[in-house]
Image (tube, rainbow, N blue to C red; front, side, top):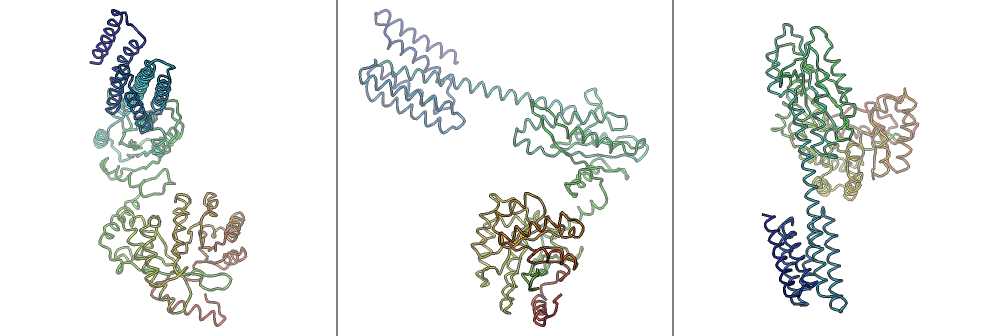
Length: 600
Protein backbone atom coordinates (compact mmCIF):
# COMPACT_ATOMS: atom_id res chain seq x y z
CA UNK A 1 0.00 0.00 0.00
CA UNK A 2 2.83 2.40 0.89
CA UNK A 3 4.50 1.74 -2.47
CA UNK A 4 1.23 2.46 -4.31
CA UNK A 5 0.74 5.79 -2.54
CA UNK A 6 4.39 6.77 -3.06
CA UNK A 7 4.12 5.87 -6.76
CA UNK A 8 0.96 7.93 -6.99
CA UNK A 9 2.78 10.90 -5.47
CA UNK A 10 5.63 10.56 -7.92
CA UNK A 11 3.16 10.31 -10.84
CA UNK A 12 1.35 13.47 -9.72
CA UNK A 13 4.64 15.36 -9.40
CA UNK A 14 5.69 14.09 -12.86
CA UNK A 15 2.42 15.32 -14.36
CA UNK A 16 3.00 18.67 -12.68
CA UNK A 17 6.51 18.94 -14.13
CA UNK A 18 5.34 17.71 -17.56
CA UNK A 19 2.54 20.27 -17.65
CA UNK A 20 4.92 23.01 -16.65
CA UNK A 21 7.41 21.95 -19.34
CA UNK A 22 4.76 21.75 -22.08
CA UNK A 23 3.66 25.31 -21.40
CA UNK A 24 7.24 26.56 -21.14
CA UNK A 25 6.54 27.55 -17.55
CA UNK A 26 8.95 25.21 -15.73
CA UNK A 27 10.05 27.30 -12.75
CA UNK A 28 11.64 26.91 -9.36
CA UNK A 29 8.22 27.08 -7.60
CA UNK A 30 6.92 24.16 -9.69
CA UNK A 31 9.98 22.09 -8.73
CA UNK A 32 9.38 22.93 -5.05
CA UNK A 33 5.73 21.99 -5.43
CA UNK A 34 6.64 18.55 -6.80
CA UNK A 35 9.23 17.97 -4.08
CA UNK A 36 6.74 19.13 -1.48
CA UNK A 37 4.08 16.72 -2.71
CA UNK A 38 6.39 13.67 -2.75
CA UNK A 39 8.02 14.39 0.62
CA UNK A 40 4.60 15.19 2.08
CA UNK A 41 3.21 11.79 1.09
CA UNK A 42 6.30 9.96 2.37
CA UNK A 43 6.22 11.81 5.68
CA UNK A 44 2.54 10.92 6.14
CA UNK A 45 3.38 7.26 5.56
CA UNK A 46 6.25 7.33 8.08
CA UNK A 47 4.51 9.38 10.80
CA UNK A 48 4.40 7.69 14.17
CA UNK A 49 0.96 8.64 15.45
CA UNK A 50 -2.38 10.20 14.50
CA UNK A 51 -1.46 13.69 15.77
CA UNK A 52 1.63 13.85 13.56
CA UNK A 53 -0.32 12.58 10.55
CA UNK A 54 -3.03 15.23 10.92
CA UNK A 55 -0.48 18.02 11.43
CA UNK A 56 1.55 16.88 8.41
CA UNK A 57 -1.58 16.86 6.21
CA UNK A 58 -2.56 20.35 7.38
CA UNK A 59 0.99 21.61 6.90
CA UNK A 60 1.07 20.27 3.32
CA UNK A 61 -2.28 21.83 2.41
CA UNK A 62 -1.34 25.18 3.96
CA UNK A 63 2.04 25.20 2.20
CA UNK A 64 0.51 24.43 -1.21
CA UNK A 65 -2.05 27.16 -0.55
CA UNK A 66 0.76 29.61 0.13
CA UNK A 67 2.57 28.59 -3.07
CA UNK A 68 -0.61 29.32 -5.01
CA UNK A 69 -1.67 32.57 -3.32
CA UNK A 70 1.34 33.98 -1.41
CA UNK A 71 -1.19 34.84 1.29
CA UNK A 72 0.00 35.98 4.72
CA UNK A 73 -2.70 33.92 6.48
CA UNK A 74 -1.41 30.72 4.86
CA UNK A 75 2.15 31.38 6.03
CA UNK A 76 0.94 32.10 9.58
CA UNK A 77 -0.98 28.82 9.59
CA UNK A 78 2.15 26.96 8.44
CA UNK A 79 4.20 28.54 11.22
CA UNK A 80 1.57 27.62 13.82
CA UNK A 81 1.48 24.00 12.61
CA UNK A 82 5.28 23.75 12.81
CA UNK A 83 5.12 25.23 16.31
CA UNK A 84 2.51 22.60 17.27
CA UNK A 85 4.80 19.85 15.98
CA UNK A 86 7.59 21.24 18.17
CA UNK A 87 5.25 21.15 21.17
CA UNK A 88 4.15 17.55 20.63
CA UNK A 89 7.77 16.48 20.07
CA UNK A 90 8.68 18.09 23.39
CA UNK A 91 5.92 16.08 25.11
CA UNK A 92 7.62 12.85 24.02
CA UNK A 93 10.87 13.26 25.92
CA UNK A 94 12.44 10.20 24.34
CA UNK A 95 12.38 11.89 20.88
CA UNK A 96 14.87 14.70 21.49
CA UNK A 97 16.16 14.54 17.91
CA UNK A 98 12.65 15.04 16.49
CA UNK A 99 12.22 18.13 18.69
CA UNK A 100 15.43 19.75 17.45
CA UNK A 101 14.64 18.95 13.81
CA UNK A 102 11.21 20.56 14.18
CA UNK A 103 12.72 23.62 15.83
CA UNK A 104 15.28 24.02 13.02
CA UNK A 105 12.54 23.64 10.39
CA UNK A 106 10.43 26.29 12.12
CA UNK A 107 13.33 28.73 12.31
CA UNK A 108 14.19 28.16 8.61
CA UNK A 109 10.56 28.66 7.62
CA UNK A 110 10.29 31.90 9.59
CA UNK A 111 13.58 33.15 8.20
CA UNK A 112 12.59 32.40 4.57
CA UNK A 113 9.15 33.92 5.13
CA UNK A 114 10.60 37.17 6.45
CA UNK A 115 13.02 37.26 3.47
CA UNK A 116 10.09 36.74 1.09
CA UNK A 117 8.00 39.58 2.51
CA UNK A 118 11.03 41.89 2.42
CA UNK A 119 11.63 40.97 -1.25
CA UNK A 120 14.96 39.22 -0.65
CA UNK A 121 13.75 35.73 -1.71
CA UNK A 122 11.02 34.30 -3.91
CA UNK A 123 7.83 32.79 -2.55
CA UNK A 124 9.13 29.25 -3.18
CA UNK A 125 11.71 29.39 -0.41
CA UNK A 126 9.38 29.07 2.65
CA UNK A 127 7.99 25.76 1.26
CA UNK A 128 11.62 24.60 0.86
CA UNK A 129 11.87 24.70 4.68
CA UNK A 130 8.73 22.56 4.85
CA UNK A 131 10.27 20.11 2.34
CA UNK A 132 13.35 19.81 4.59
CA UNK A 133 11.01 19.33 7.54
CA UNK A 134 9.31 16.39 5.81
CA UNK A 135 12.64 14.87 4.76
CA UNK A 136 14.08 15.17 8.28
CA UNK A 137 10.90 13.80 9.86
CA UNK A 138 10.94 10.89 7.42
CA UNK A 139 14.59 10.04 8.12
CA UNK A 140 14.25 10.46 11.91
CA UNK A 141 11.19 8.19 12.00
CA UNK A 142 12.96 5.63 9.84
CA UNK A 143 16.09 5.50 12.01
CA UNK A 144 14.08 5.33 15.23
CA UNK A 145 12.03 2.49 13.80
CA UNK A 146 15.19 0.63 12.77
CA UNK A 147 16.61 1.13 16.25
CA UNK A 148 13.45 -0.28 17.84
CA UNK A 149 13.57 -3.25 15.51
CA UNK A 150 17.22 -3.93 16.41
CA UNK A 151 16.44 -3.73 20.12
CA UNK A 152 13.40 -5.98 19.73
CA UNK A 153 15.42 -8.48 17.69
CA UNK A 154 18.24 -8.49 20.25
CA UNK A 155 15.73 -8.96 23.07
CA UNK A 156 14.08 -11.81 21.18
CA UNK A 157 17.44 -13.47 20.58
CA UNK A 158 18.27 -13.16 24.29
CA UNK A 159 14.87 -14.55 25.25
CA UNK A 160 15.26 -17.47 22.85
CA UNK A 161 18.80 -18.15 24.07
CA UNK A 162 17.70 -18.08 27.70
CA UNK A 163 14.70 -20.25 26.89
CA UNK A 164 16.83 -22.79 25.03
CA UNK A 165 19.32 -23.01 27.91
CA UNK A 166 16.50 -23.46 30.42
CA UNK A 167 14.93 -26.13 28.23
CA UNK A 168 18.10 -28.17 28.76
CA UNK A 169 17.31 -28.29 32.50
CA UNK A 170 14.73 -30.48 34.22
CA UNK A 171 11.26 -29.10 34.82
CA UNK A 172 9.79 -29.29 38.31
CA UNK A 173 7.21 -32.01 37.53
CA UNK A 174 9.78 -34.17 35.72
CA UNK A 175 12.24 -33.82 38.59
CA UNK A 176 9.65 -34.58 41.27
CA UNK A 177 8.42 -37.69 39.48
CA UNK A 178 11.97 -38.78 38.72
CA UNK A 179 12.98 -38.49 42.36
CA UNK A 180 9.94 -40.39 43.61
CA UNK A 181 10.71 -43.19 41.17
CA UNK A 182 14.42 -43.20 41.96
CA UNK A 183 15.22 -46.77 42.85
CA UNK A 184 17.97 -46.70 45.48
CA UNK A 185 18.32 -49.54 47.97
CA UNK A 186 19.62 -47.36 50.82
CA UNK A 187 17.99 -44.33 52.40
CA UNK A 188 21.10 -42.22 51.92
CA UNK A 189 19.49 -39.69 49.63
CA UNK A 190 19.90 -35.93 49.92
CA UNK A 191 17.96 -33.18 48.18
CA UNK A 192 19.67 -29.81 47.72
CA UNK A 193 17.92 -26.50 47.04
CA UNK A 194 20.01 -23.72 45.47
CA UNK A 195 18.68 -20.15 45.68
CA UNK A 196 20.57 -17.47 43.75
CA UNK A 197 20.65 -13.97 45.25
CA UNK A 198 21.44 -10.53 43.87
CA UNK A 199 19.41 -10.85 40.67
CA UNK A 200 16.99 -8.06 41.63
CA UNK A 201 19.67 -5.40 41.44
CA UNK A 202 20.92 -6.73 38.10
CA UNK A 203 17.38 -6.65 36.69
CA UNK A 204 17.01 -3.02 37.77
CA UNK A 205 20.33 -2.01 36.27
CA UNK A 206 20.47 -4.00 33.04
CA UNK A 207 16.98 -5.39 32.48
CA UNK A 208 15.02 -8.61 32.97
CA UNK A 209 16.05 -10.08 29.61
CA UNK A 210 19.67 -9.84 30.69
CA UNK A 211 18.79 -11.40 34.07
CA UNK A 212 16.98 -14.31 32.41
CA UNK A 213 19.97 -14.99 30.19
CA UNK A 214 22.31 -14.83 33.20
CA UNK A 215 20.17 -17.34 35.11
CA UNK A 216 20.08 -19.67 32.10
CA UNK A 217 23.86 -19.54 31.65
CA UNK A 218 24.48 -20.16 35.34
CA UNK A 219 22.02 -23.07 35.30
CA UNK A 220 23.98 -24.69 32.48
CA UNK A 221 27.27 -24.18 34.35
CA UNK A 222 25.82 -25.66 37.56
CA UNK A 223 24.48 -28.67 35.66
CA UNK A 224 27.98 -29.32 34.24
CA UNK A 225 29.31 -29.57 37.82
CA UNK A 226 26.79 -32.30 38.66
CA UNK A 227 27.74 -34.83 36.00
CA UNK A 228 28.51 -37.72 38.28
CA UNK A 229 26.90 -41.12 38.63
CA UNK A 230 25.67 -40.49 42.19
CA UNK A 231 23.46 -37.54 41.23
CA UNK A 232 19.88 -38.15 40.07
CA UNK A 233 20.05 -37.96 36.27
CA UNK A 234 17.12 -37.94 33.84
CA UNK A 235 17.12 -38.09 30.07
CA UNK A 236 16.05 -34.92 28.28
CA UNK A 237 16.37 -34.50 24.50
CA UNK A 238 18.65 -37.57 24.43
CA UNK A 239 20.94 -35.96 27.00
CA UNK A 240 21.40 -36.77 30.69
CA UNK A 241 20.42 -33.76 32.86
CA UNK A 242 20.94 -33.49 36.62
CA UNK A 243 19.76 -29.99 37.56
CA UNK A 244 16.11 -28.97 37.97
CA UNK A 245 15.05 -25.40 37.33
CA UNK A 246 12.22 -24.67 39.78
CA UNK A 247 11.52 -21.17 38.47
CA UNK A 248 12.63 -17.70 39.53
CA UNK A 249 16.09 -18.10 41.09
CA UNK A 250 15.63 -21.60 42.51
CA UNK A 251 17.33 -24.83 41.40
CA UNK A 252 17.41 -28.32 42.89
CA UNK A 253 19.27 -31.60 42.53
CA UNK A 254 19.39 -34.90 44.40
CA UNK A 255 22.39 -36.99 45.46
CA UNK A 256 22.88 -40.59 46.59
CA UNK A 257 25.44 -40.46 49.41
CA UNK A 258 25.77 -44.22 49.89
CA UNK A 259 29.30 -44.30 48.45
CA UNK A 260 30.52 -40.84 49.48
CA UNK A 261 28.80 -39.44 52.56
CA UNK A 262 29.76 -35.82 51.93
CA UNK A 263 29.41 -35.77 48.16
CA UNK A 264 26.56 -33.25 48.27
CA UNK A 265 28.64 -30.82 50.30
CA UNK A 266 31.55 -31.09 47.86
CA UNK A 267 29.20 -30.42 44.95
CA UNK A 268 27.65 -27.44 46.72
CA UNK A 269 31.06 -25.86 47.26
CA UNK A 270 31.89 -26.37 43.59
CA UNK A 271 28.62 -24.70 42.66
CA UNK A 272 29.45 -21.89 45.10
CA UNK A 273 32.69 -21.24 43.24
CA UNK A 274 30.87 -21.24 39.88
CA UNK A 275 28.20 -18.78 41.02
CA UNK A 276 30.67 -16.41 42.67
CA UNK A 277 32.81 -16.19 39.54
CA UNK A 278 31.76 -13.47 37.06
CA UNK A 279 29.53 -14.77 34.27
CA UNK A 280 29.74 -12.85 31.01
CA UNK A 281 26.56 -11.89 29.18
CA UNK A 282 26.71 -9.38 26.30
CA UNK A 283 30.31 -8.54 27.26
CA UNK A 284 29.16 -7.63 30.79
CA UNK A 285 30.53 -9.57 33.76
CA UNK A 286 27.92 -10.23 36.44
CA UNK A 287 28.25 -12.01 39.74
CA UNK A 288 25.57 -13.47 42.01
CA UNK A 289 25.64 -15.14 45.40
CA UNK A 290 23.75 -18.17 46.64
CA UNK A 291 22.16 -19.87 49.62
CA UNK A 292 21.84 -23.63 49.75
CA UNK A 293 19.59 -25.87 51.85
CA UNK A 294 20.31 -29.55 52.45
CA UNK A 295 17.51 -32.00 53.32
CA UNK A 296 18.37 -35.60 54.17
CA UNK A 297 15.68 -38.05 53.10
CA UNK A 298 15.55 -40.33 56.13
CA UNK A 299 11.83 -41.08 56.10
CA UNK A 300 11.30 -41.75 52.39
CA UNK A 301 9.40 -38.51 51.88
CA UNK A 302 8.28 -37.31 48.48
CA UNK A 303 10.37 -34.80 46.59
CA UNK A 304 7.61 -32.22 47.08
CA UNK A 305 7.80 -32.63 50.86
CA UNK A 306 11.60 -32.38 50.81
CA UNK A 307 11.46 -29.21 48.73
CA UNK A 308 9.02 -27.68 51.22
CA UNK A 309 11.45 -28.44 54.04
CA UNK A 310 14.33 -26.93 52.06
CA UNK A 311 12.41 -23.70 51.53
CA UNK A 312 11.63 -23.56 55.25
CA UNK A 313 15.32 -24.00 56.05
CA UNK A 314 16.24 -20.94 53.98
CA UNK A 315 13.30 -18.85 55.19
CA UNK A 316 13.79 -19.48 58.91
CA UNK A 317 17.54 -19.04 59.19
CA UNK A 318 19.71 -15.97 59.15
CA UNK A 319 20.77 -14.57 55.79
CA UNK A 320 24.35 -14.75 57.04
CA UNK A 321 24.19 -18.55 56.84
CA UNK A 322 24.58 -19.51 53.18
CA UNK A 323 24.63 -23.29 53.76
CA UNK A 324 21.82 -24.69 55.89
CA UNK A 325 20.90 -28.23 56.85
CA UNK A 326 17.23 -28.76 57.59
CA UNK A 327 16.62 -29.65 61.23
CA UNK A 328 13.50 -30.51 63.18
CA UNK A 329 13.72 -27.18 65.01
CA UNK A 330 13.16 -25.30 61.74
CA UNK A 331 9.85 -27.07 61.21
CA UNK A 332 8.92 -26.28 64.81
CA UNK A 333 9.65 -22.57 64.23
CA UNK A 334 7.48 -22.65 61.11
CA UNK A 335 4.64 -24.28 63.05
CA UNK A 336 5.04 -21.69 65.79
CA UNK A 337 4.86 -18.84 63.27
CA UNK A 338 1.69 -20.24 61.77
CA UNK A 339 0.22 -20.55 65.27
CA UNK A 340 1.17 -16.98 66.18
CA UNK A 341 -0.25 -15.60 62.94
CA UNK A 342 -3.48 -17.47 63.57
CA UNK A 343 -3.72 -16.18 67.16
CA UNK A 344 -2.94 -12.59 66.14
CA UNK A 345 -6.07 -12.55 64.00
CA UNK A 346 -8.24 -12.88 67.15
CA UNK A 347 -5.98 -11.00 69.57
CA UNK A 348 -7.41 -8.80 72.32
CA UNK A 349 -4.72 -6.20 73.03
CA UNK A 350 -5.92 -5.32 76.53
CA UNK A 351 -6.29 -8.94 77.52
CA UNK A 352 -3.33 -10.62 75.82
CA UNK A 353 -0.70 -7.86 75.85
CA UNK A 354 1.07 -6.33 78.82
CA UNK A 355 3.71 -3.62 79.10
CA UNK A 356 6.79 -4.15 81.24
CA UNK A 357 9.09 -1.34 82.35
CA UNK A 358 12.88 -1.16 82.38
CA UNK A 359 14.61 1.89 83.94
CA UNK A 360 17.42 3.99 82.42
CA UNK A 361 19.62 5.38 85.21
CA UNK A 362 21.57 8.67 85.19
CA UNK A 363 25.15 7.67 86.08
CA UNK A 364 26.07 10.89 87.85
CA UNK A 365 22.99 11.28 90.08
CA UNK A 366 21.45 7.77 90.14
CA UNK A 367 18.14 9.41 89.24
CA UNK A 368 15.85 7.67 86.77
CA UNK A 369 16.48 9.36 83.41
CA UNK A 370 13.47 7.70 81.78
CA UNK A 371 11.44 4.50 81.83
CA UNK A 372 11.42 2.23 78.78
CA UNK A 373 8.23 0.27 78.13
CA UNK A 374 8.59 -3.23 76.70
CA UNK A 375 5.78 -5.16 74.99
CA UNK A 376 5.04 -8.69 76.19
CA UNK A 377 2.50 -11.21 74.87
CA UNK A 378 1.06 -13.67 77.40
CA UNK A 379 0.46 -16.54 75.00
CA UNK A 380 -1.64 -19.46 76.17
CA UNK A 381 0.67 -22.03 74.53
CA UNK A 382 4.14 -20.45 74.39
CA UNK A 383 4.09 -18.47 77.64
CA UNK A 384 5.28 -14.85 77.94
CA UNK A 385 6.90 -13.75 74.68
CA UNK A 386 9.19 -10.77 74.25
CA UNK A 387 8.41 -8.46 71.34
CA UNK A 388 11.48 -9.57 69.39
CA UNK A 389 9.95 -13.06 69.12
CA UNK A 390 6.80 -11.93 67.31
CA UNK A 391 7.67 -8.64 65.57
CA UNK A 392 7.85 -10.35 62.16
CA UNK A 393 4.46 -11.94 62.72
CA UNK A 394 2.95 -8.57 63.71
CA UNK A 395 4.20 -7.09 60.46
CA UNK A 396 2.95 -10.05 58.40
CA UNK A 397 -0.49 -9.75 60.02
CA UNK A 398 -0.68 -6.02 59.23
CA UNK A 399 -0.94 -5.07 62.92
CA UNK A 400 2.14 -2.88 63.21
CA UNK A 401 0.28 0.43 63.24
CA UNK A 402 -2.68 -0.65 65.46
CA UNK A 403 -0.30 -2.09 68.09
CA UNK A 404 1.90 1.02 67.96
CA UNK A 405 -1.20 3.13 68.59
CA UNK A 406 -2.20 0.95 71.55
CA UNK A 407 1.29 1.05 73.10
CA UNK A 408 1.57 4.85 72.71
CA UNK A 409 -1.81 5.39 74.38
CA UNK A 410 -0.85 3.16 77.32
CA UNK A 411 2.47 5.00 77.60
CA UNK A 412 0.66 8.34 77.71
CA UNK A 413 -1.62 7.07 80.49
CA UNK A 414 1.42 6.00 82.53
CA UNK A 415 3.22 9.29 81.87
CA UNK A 416 0.17 11.23 83.08
CA UNK A 417 -0.13 9.06 86.21
CA UNK A 418 3.55 9.70 87.02
CA UNK A 419 3.11 13.47 86.56
CA UNK A 420 0.10 13.48 88.89
CA UNK A 421 2.38 11.97 91.54
CA UNK A 422 4.74 14.92 90.92
CA UNK A 423 7.47 12.62 89.66
CA UNK A 424 9.39 13.95 86.67
CA UNK A 425 10.29 10.78 84.73
CA UNK A 426 9.57 10.47 80.96
CA UNK A 427 8.25 7.29 79.34
CA UNK A 428 9.86 5.80 76.23
CA UNK A 429 8.06 3.65 73.67
CA UNK A 430 9.72 1.09 71.43
CA UNK A 431 8.49 1.21 67.85
CA UNK A 432 8.87 -1.66 65.41
CA UNK A 433 10.11 0.59 62.62
CA UNK A 434 7.80 1.05 59.69
CA UNK A 435 5.02 2.85 61.53
CA UNK A 436 7.45 5.68 62.29
CA UNK A 437 7.51 6.47 58.58
CA UNK A 438 3.79 7.21 58.48
CA UNK A 439 2.42 10.70 58.99
CA UNK A 440 -0.72 9.08 60.34
CA UNK A 441 1.12 7.73 63.36
CA UNK A 442 2.94 10.99 64.07
CA UNK A 443 -0.41 12.82 63.99
CA UNK A 444 -1.76 10.19 66.39
CA UNK A 445 1.13 10.81 68.81
CA UNK A 446 0.50 14.55 68.72
CA UNK A 447 -3.20 14.00 69.55
CA UNK A 448 -2.29 11.64 72.41
CA UNK A 449 0.01 14.25 73.96
CA UNK A 450 -2.70 16.90 73.86
CA UNK A 451 -5.36 14.53 75.17
CA UNK A 452 -3.24 13.51 78.19
CA UNK A 453 -1.92 17.04 78.85
CA UNK A 454 1.67 15.97 78.33
CA UNK A 455 4.44 18.44 77.57
CA UNK A 456 7.80 18.38 75.84
CA UNK A 457 9.95 15.38 76.72
CA UNK A 458 7.23 13.42 78.56
CA UNK A 459 7.15 10.83 75.75
CA UNK A 460 10.28 9.44 74.07
CA UNK A 461 10.21 7.47 70.84
CA UNK A 462 12.78 4.69 70.53
CA UNK A 463 13.46 3.15 67.14
CA UNK A 464 16.20 0.83 65.85
CA UNK A 465 19.14 2.41 64.09
CA UNK A 466 18.30 0.74 60.77
CA UNK A 467 14.96 2.59 60.65
CA UNK A 468 16.56 6.02 60.77
CA UNK A 469 19.40 5.09 58.48
CA UNK A 470 16.94 3.83 55.90
CA UNK A 471 14.94 7.05 55.79
CA UNK A 472 15.40 9.39 52.81
CA UNK A 473 17.69 12.33 53.57
CA UNK A 474 18.67 10.49 56.75
CA UNK A 475 15.18 10.95 58.18
CA UNK A 476 15.64 14.65 58.88
CA UNK A 477 12.09 15.57 57.90
CA UNK A 478 10.57 12.80 60.05
CA UNK A 479 12.67 13.79 63.05
CA UNK A 480 11.75 17.44 62.52
CA UNK A 481 8.06 16.57 62.67
CA UNK A 482 8.55 14.65 65.93
CA UNK A 483 10.46 17.55 67.42
CA UNK A 484 7.75 20.01 66.39
CA UNK A 485 5.26 17.84 68.30
CA UNK A 486 7.40 17.89 71.48
CA UNK A 487 8.38 14.22 71.14
CA UNK A 488 11.93 13.26 72.10
CA UNK A 489 13.75 10.69 69.96
CA UNK A 490 16.12 7.91 71.01
CA UNK A 491 18.23 5.98 68.50
CA UNK A 492 18.30 2.35 69.65
CA UNK A 493 20.82 -0.45 69.02
CA UNK A 494 23.65 1.75 67.76
CA UNK A 495 26.40 -0.61 66.64
CA UNK A 496 29.88 -0.14 65.30
CA UNK A 497 29.21 0.15 61.58
CA UNK A 498 31.11 3.15 60.15
CA UNK A 499 28.08 4.12 58.04
CA UNK A 500 25.92 4.45 61.14
CA UNK A 501 28.46 6.57 62.97
CA UNK A 502 29.07 8.84 59.97
CA UNK A 503 25.37 9.68 59.71
CA UNK A 504 24.90 10.33 63.42
CA UNK A 505 25.64 14.09 63.24
CA UNK A 506 22.88 14.51 60.63
CA UNK A 507 20.14 13.25 62.98
CA UNK A 508 18.47 15.60 65.46
CA UNK A 509 18.40 13.15 68.38
CA UNK A 510 17.89 13.48 72.12
CA UNK A 511 19.30 10.10 73.13
CA UNK A 512 21.47 7.34 71.67
CA UNK A 513 21.55 3.79 73.02
CA UNK A 514 24.75 1.84 72.45
CA UNK A 515 24.05 -1.81 71.74
CA UNK A 516 24.81 -4.25 74.56
CA UNK A 517 27.12 -6.31 72.30
CA UNK A 518 29.67 -3.49 72.48
CA UNK A 519 29.41 -3.29 76.27
CA UNK A 520 30.12 -7.03 76.59
CA UNK A 521 33.49 -6.62 74.87
CA UNK A 522 34.67 -3.71 77.03
CA UNK A 523 36.62 -5.83 79.49
CA UNK A 524 38.32 -7.90 76.78
CA UNK A 525 38.92 -5.65 73.78
CA UNK A 526 40.95 -2.44 73.94
CA UNK A 527 39.74 -1.39 70.49
CA UNK A 528 36.11 -1.65 71.62
CA UNK A 529 36.84 0.63 74.58
CA UNK A 530 38.43 3.18 72.25
CA UNK A 531 35.49 2.96 69.89
CA UNK A 532 32.92 3.43 72.64
CA UNK A 533 34.88 6.36 74.03
CA UNK A 534 34.83 7.96 70.57
CA UNK A 535 31.06 7.46 70.23
CA UNK A 536 30.46 9.04 73.64
CA UNK A 537 32.74 12.02 72.93
CA UNK A 538 31.10 12.66 69.54
CA UNK A 539 27.59 12.39 70.97
CA UNK A 540 28.41 14.68 73.90
CA UNK A 541 29.73 17.29 71.49
CA UNK A 542 26.44 17.06 69.55
CA UNK A 543 24.37 17.46 72.72
CA UNK A 544 23.10 13.87 72.55
CA UNK A 545 22.83 11.84 75.76
CA UNK A 546 24.42 8.39 75.47
CA UNK A 547 22.87 5.36 77.18
CA UNK A 548 24.81 2.10 77.38
CA UNK A 549 22.61 -1.00 77.32
CA UNK A 550 23.35 -4.41 78.78
CA UNK A 551 25.05 -3.28 82.01
CA UNK A 552 25.09 -6.39 84.17
CA UNK A 553 28.19 -5.98 86.36
CA UNK A 554 29.96 -3.35 88.43
CA UNK A 555 33.02 -3.70 86.19
CA UNK A 556 31.04 -2.68 83.11
CA UNK A 557 29.45 0.16 85.05
CA UNK A 558 32.86 1.42 86.13
CA UNK A 559 34.16 1.38 82.55
CA UNK A 560 31.32 3.43 81.10
CA UNK A 561 31.38 5.83 84.08
CA UNK A 562 35.04 6.60 83.38
CA UNK A 563 34.15 7.40 79.75
CA UNK A 564 31.64 10.12 80.74
CA UNK A 565 28.68 8.12 79.51
CA UNK A 566 25.44 9.85 80.55
CA UNK A 567 23.24 6.89 81.53
CA UNK A 568 23.06 3.10 81.78
CA UNK A 569 20.45 0.37 81.48
CA UNK A 570 20.66 -3.30 82.41
CA UNK A 571 20.07 -6.06 84.91
CA UNK A 572 22.49 -4.41 87.35
CA UNK A 573 19.70 -1.96 88.24
CA UNK A 574 16.56 -3.98 87.60
CA UNK A 575 15.05 -6.63 85.39
CA UNK A 576 11.97 -5.72 83.31
CA UNK A 577 8.91 -5.67 85.59
CA UNK A 578 5.14 -5.45 84.93
CA UNK A 579 4.00 -1.85 84.59
CA UNK A 580 1.28 -2.24 87.24
CA UNK A 581 3.96 -1.79 89.89
CA UNK A 582 5.72 1.15 88.24
CA UNK A 583 4.54 3.95 90.55
CA UNK A 584 5.43 2.02 93.72
CA UNK A 585 8.82 1.09 92.31
CA UNK A 586 9.62 4.73 91.43
CA UNK A 587 8.62 5.96 94.89
CA UNK A 588 10.80 3.30 96.52
CA UNK A 589 13.77 4.32 94.32
CA UNK A 590 13.36 7.99 95.21
CA UNK A 591 12.99 7.18 98.90
CA UNK A 592 16.32 5.33 98.91
CA UNK A 593 18.02 8.23 97.19
CA UNK A 594 16.57 10.69 99.69
CA UNK A 595 17.91 8.56 102.55
CA UNK A 596 21.37 8.53 100.99
CA UNK A 597 21.15 4.85 100.16
CA UNK A 598 22.19 3.14 96.96
CA UNK A 599 18.88 2.52 95.16
CA UNK A 600 19.89 -0.70 93.42
